[in-house]
Image (cartoon, rainbow, N blue to C red; front, side, top):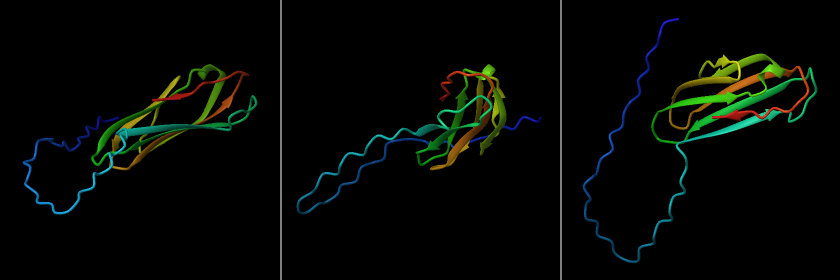
Length: 134
């Protein structure tokens, strides 16, 4: 498989010269903006309980909250891998790699874009699994 090198635009951050502004009348202070992380993630597991031989779907999602393209990695940690049979792994816009207890992928995300990994599995033994996303 050929190696594909991806590049992203770099943004230079500097100091802009301030211009004098004349203001007449009262000035209202602007409310402070809430801090939003550059990338946010979520993890959903459906259903929350099942039986041996049932089907479980795990979806991890990452969203670029910035105004510039970001390089993002997304993964699902699957600690009970030996007690399951994974029946499907898919991703968008990336192609996940299944490394047994870790399924991950990465790509460049445009501003506001979302990346996701979806894993469908069948439990082969009773127990509890605590999936984590990163």
